[in-house]
Structures are given as structure tokens and as C-alpha cells.
Amino acid sequence: MTGARRVGTWEVERSSGPAGPFHARDLPDEPVPAVWVHEVTRPALVLGSTQGDEVVDTGAAAAAGVDVVRRRSGGGAVLLVPGRQLWVDVVVPRDHERWSDDVGLAFHWLGEAWADALGSLGVAAEVHRGALVRTAWSRLVCFAGLGPGEVTVGGRKVVGVSQRRTRAAARFQCSALAAWEPGPLLHLLRLDPAERRRAGAELADAAAGVGVDLAALEAAFLARLG
Image (cartoon, rainbow, N blue to C red; front, side, top):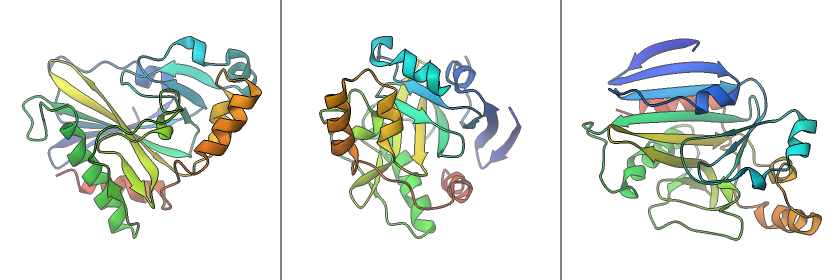
């Protein structure tokens, strides 16, 4: 951890380092409202909690110097590269005003905070409030689908959100993209050449970068958590 401070009712921690220890972090037994901002210091392919190792081309990952780790929340794979995304975990205790027993609706306020933050920086963003939108690739790649509370700009996903719940709290894991380039991610997945080409073509317009400075977006997001 490189620093901690309080923003409103939230304890904000900033850290940097490899992705593995951060994603292995457990929720505390007595959680408080918290925001964990983590900057990776080396590339990492982060799998969703239900994805098996068989989806990874381990040889390609090793050759590229990419760590392969698994997060505690669900969804598809995300490629983290230093300076290329803003990764934020938001911890909501069960007794917090932002808690919702509805696992779908629970995402909405968080998506609204991201969209409002982008709006304050001149980016017109929308929050997806419907059901999960699946595609041919969404079980494999996070940014190939669209879930409740996730944020789009011009119909393209710019902020992905996943969730893990315990009896004590919910941990929302958020990734805001600086740019969307599906090729490097697909290169690390176990696909045959034809599948990889098709996925690259079909995912080219699925997502996009947020179009703003990530440090400015982090500050704007924190200001809107309440």
C-alpha cells in the first residue's frame, strides 16, 4: 500500500505492485466502506473467478512476461497493463446505505458514479440498467458483454464492473479503460487462429477508452461516491 486517506465516509487506499497479491486480498471480517485503487507494475491477465486455467495460452503468457492471476469476482478475462487502465475496488458493508439485496440493482449506483465522473470531464456516458447482455465472447472476455451498472460511451463499454459478496460485504471490482485493443488480450487466450481472427473483428467496436486522463477520472469518481 502506497497511501491511505479518507474521502467522505470512505477509506481510500492506493497501492501498486503485481496483480496477484491484490486480487488475492480477502475482505476483512469487519469491513468498512472502502475504495482500493491499485496500479499494476507488470502486465497481468486477470481471470474471472469461475474461469478455468484451460482458457489461457500459458506459453504465450510466459513469452510475453504476463502474469496470470484470478480475481475473486466473476466475469471474463481482463488484461491489465501498467498505465492502461484505472482499477478500483469498492467495498460496501452490508449495513451501508449503498447496500442492496438485489445483486443486479446493487451495481446501478456505482455505474451512476462512474458516469457522473465522466460527465464532469466532458464525456457523455450512459449506465446499463437492463439485464446482462451476452455475446459469443462474453464468457471469455469481460469487455465483450455488458452487465448491469456498467458504463458505455457511444454504445461502447468503457467501464466494466464485477461483484463478489460475502455475509459481511460486497466487493465491486471496476476497470476503466484508457484504450481498447482486443488483440493483445486474445493473443493470451487458447484460441485457434480462425477463432482469434473472428474474435478480433467482432470485438473491435465492443469497447473503447474513456477518453480522459485516468488520474482526473479517479479524482472525479472519488468525489461522487458520497
